[in-house]
Image (cartoon, rainbow, N blue to C red; front, side, top):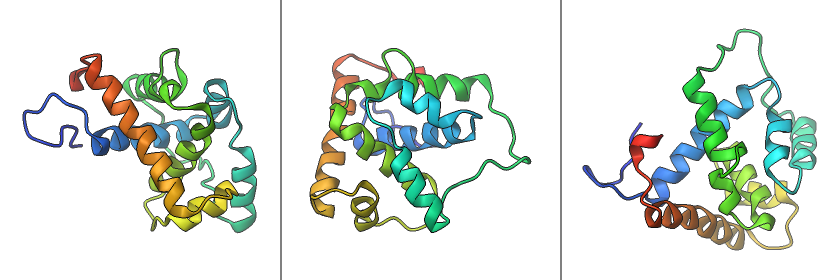
Length: 155
């Protein structure tokens, strides 16, 4: 896991924030109640997107052989996605579903295309507009972390 973009850097970058959020999303999906955990932190359910993915056969099912989570992994999920003061709370409410969709798709590690994001979101905006909204959301988190002096050591 490479957190700082520049060796010895104490600043959060877009890539570092995105990497940590994708990692946390993966842990969230391994939790027995991942959708409910996401709903507690967001104003809009991602369930319609989940239903569409199930119909396409894309949905990641919980498999019995999956290892449990360590407490540090659960803490990461809470700090970034579900807890009080989570990073996602700094994202404009209308963009939280978009961020969730992108994190889910990036977590699958099987090809990523912004046109798929646009289709999943059912957005009237094009793929490029969604990419820009997502970029602003993640960059905003990095800016807030840097402004607050948040250290990489905390995560």
